[in-house]
Each structure stands twice: as structure tokens, then as C-alpha cells.
Image (cartoon, rainbow, N blue to C red; front, side):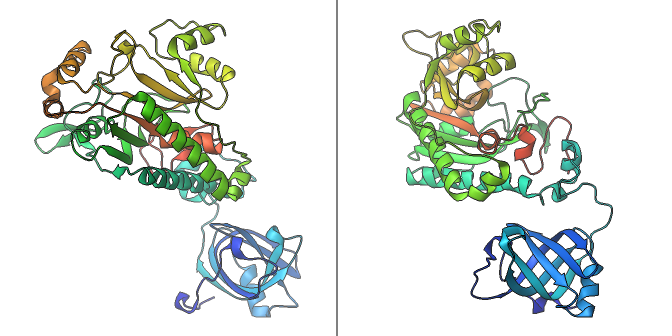
Length: 439
């Protein structure tokens, strides 16, 4: 086990090793998942990104030196194995490797902080403290393969719709929507903040000729929530479209979501099976439910929700018992929506805003925006904010701002829908919440 790695080359991942392979000799690299020493035969389960392959070492078929080398290995150590493929119905994937040589690349310390075989279950905090080990579990890394595929699908879908990807600042001088949910930072001699969303910047883009834009990037919210659905750093999929209203971008959103689900279902079959998920591609258009109807629906379930209130968690749960799959809540009261949301001209108390829900989980919010400078100033004042704090933003509305609309889709919450995760922290490699700043 002293060979140099330069003499080795990985030929396959576990998923690629099949009993019917034409080339019987393979080289695999990965971690030792399990070792079973039965005296005259040793079974080693090697785990890599794609699965687990059984390495079978009978003392009668391998050299005595190799047999003892295998016997000395520890769980979770990193190895390279070269051997021949042999059909074995009892082995994972119906195949085993008879080793010809093995290279120990690194030894794992013992005991392990958690058990990647999941025979001993670990609490979420223990798992997140040792996330590098937690992610070796296929039940965990399947979530991130699915998330990766979803984000790929989103980008392809938007690019095919002739959207342009943009990158907006994450260090900002003032709040996007006002309020105190901001992380202040020292920016040389001034105070600055981590961006709550790209909202103001993507609206400013509507005054340019780049009138269909999207961004997939972090957002930061200093909310003191401690729930299974909230993060303080998250990835937002943001879209803004000029010469459009809320109906246009709702259609865009539902088609994007349905397409992403279809794409994940097609390309992540093994990961979905690992998670026990059987995704249904929702039919479009998604149901539209008026906010006033939502109030009546949840109150019929015994929830005390008044018109003009935002949805409480109890209201969301009640709604989730009534509604299945994906649906929009429309015609929200203007009072509880941000200043940049366009009010209904016939009834200004109602806005052109919407939320996209999956059962009891909000995954997206959007609206037609205010594009008229004077109305925007009026709305800013109406929220108790100072228009002078938004002068750079407001300037874009003085020189020909077209009507526009957009939305933001939470990548982690959408991933929860795709994977069945109950805790949003499961969908983030290294989550940042109220209590966690490391690793």
C-alpha cells in the first residue's frame, strides 16, 4: 500500500460497474463504508459519489500480503482498489470486485463523530458539526444532486426564454424594503448592509434594454426565526421582466417549476429512490386562490385570521390540509406588501401581488411593480420610509421606466418540495441560522 497515486487512474464510479461489463478490470476510489472479516474471506464495501461496491477478498484468491493489507484497513479511510469484475447477485448492484492491488490514500481517525452507515442515527446539530462526514451518506448527498439538477434546469429554462443572467451587489447602503431585518457591516468609514434581495437592482435593470433578467445568488435576512423553514443566508432565484404584469410572470413561474420537477424526475431517478420520493409533475396552470378566499378557508379550520393579516404558521398549516400540490395566492392586501408592489388601480387596497405555495410552504413571492415615480415615492412614504434613502433607485424611474413584474423563488424551499426534506437546513451544505456560523 505504498504505491504512488500517479501510477493509478480511476476508471469507473460504483454506478458504472455492471456484471455484464466487457472490460473486467476496473479501478475504483472512495471511502471504506464497512469491513466484514469472516476469517477466510473479507468483504469491504467501498463508497464513492455514486454508490457502494463490494470488494470481496477470499484468502484463496488473493495474495497473503494483499489479504493482510485489506485486514488492516479502517472504516472511512480513503483507498484505491484495482480488481476484476465478477457477477454476484447477493452484492450491492449485483456485482463484486476481486482485488488485485489496493492503495491506502489516507487513514481515518477513530472513533468517528457520527456513523455514515446510519446504523446509529445522529441529531441534526451533530450532523451539521461534522457535515463533511454527513455528506458521505447517499441519503444526504442525494439532496444536493437534486438541488444541482434543479438549478441547472432553471438556468436552461430561463436562457431558452432569452433571459440574461445578472450579478447584483450584495453589499448595499440601505434596506431593500425597510425594516430592521438587516446585517450591518463596516464598509471602510461607513456603515453598509448585506443585501436582503436584489429587488431594487433588478427593477433598475428594467430601465435598460436588458429587460428580461435573472439572478441566482445569496440573500441575507437578519430574522430571529428559529423554525424548520427559515435561514439567515439562502439562495434566491430572482426574475424581472419589463413590459409585463403579474399574470405574465406567474405563467413563467409555474412553467419553470413544472419543468424543473419534470427534469429532476427524469435525471435523478436513483437519488429520488434513495430518498423514497416519487415526484408528480404538476399540471399547469396552477390553481389561483384569492387572499380573501384564503381567509375564509383557514377560518373554517378554526384558525382566527383577520383580513389584512399576513398568514400565520397556523393558517399555513390549515391551508396545507385543504390545498394539495402547488397553487398561487393572489390579490393580497396592499398594506402588507412592500412599497414597490403595484396596487390595483380600481381598488388600491388590493395589490397585484402573489405567493406561490406548495401545500403549507411558501416558496415564492412576486408582483407587478410600481413603475411610476410619483406613486413610488408616495408608497415609500406610506411605509414610513424616507425617499431620500432611495434616491439612486428612484432616479431610474424618472427617465422612462416601463411596466414590469417579477418574483423570487427560494432555492432551498423548492428543494424541500423536491426531496421531501422537513428541515430547510437539510438543503444547505453549511447552513447559517440564528445560532450557527460554523463550520
